[in-house]
Image (cartoon, rainbow, N blue to C red; front, side, top):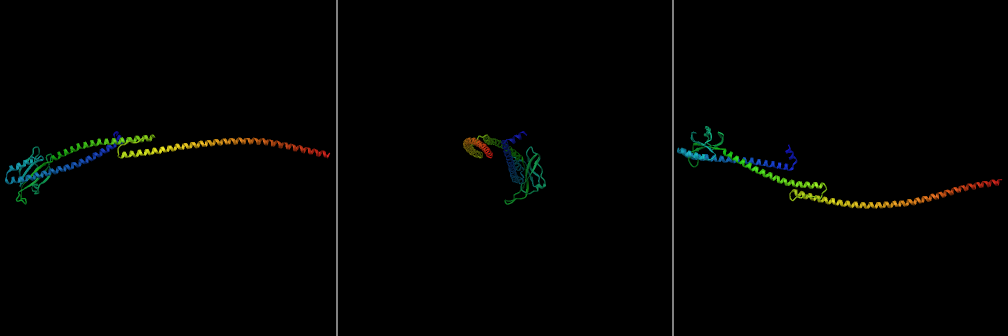
Length: 330
């Protein structure tokens, strides 16, 4: 579980494992097809060799049967057994009796033929069978007496040989060993190549990540340094160009901000000066109004005093008039 959790967190592990699996699948498919082709080729070679040997044995045995020379047929059979894959040789007369038979040491008895197989007049009949624990191909070819150059005469016997398939098995083993060694080398080289490639990719990604972190902290002067001309190099160039554009935009913004602050401060000072001037004017006007109010108060007091005196004078005049009238009546 810990191994898989590390793979889930590691991009490098995912990439290497995925690529490794793809390489293994490709290698396995190649091995299967190669083994299939090699098996067909070995089978075809063995069948071709068996047909050739049984055909040659039939031609030679024809001379031996017609001449009654068993030694001639024996030499031909022993010559066939010198071939590596040949296991046994049998030559029959036309009645199916063994004229000559020989089997290599270490193999079981030669399997007998049925009457139907001996009556088969087809040229070179073959089939797969077992000789003890050995898997073989059997080839049976009728021996005909050649009457002329245009055709074949009557059957005078049969030649039969057995070809071991051990060579095919050994050939397959060698092919399998070769492919396993080759696959191991390919996997090793692929593993090394993937580590080198992923290492370069990760170094580039780490560099990009570090620059992004610096940008997040406010360092807009950071740039991604990638020398390659691949997709990472294109991305780095675009990113660096974007950061330069962003930095230029922010610098212009800061310059506009400072200019606006200067204008705002100047306007604020002007407003403060205007406010101070208005305050002074208000104070002056207030003082003038207060002075006028005091003057009006004084005038009001004088006017009220005069009114009071006029009222008293009017009362005294009225009193004097009343007294004069009373005197006149007396």
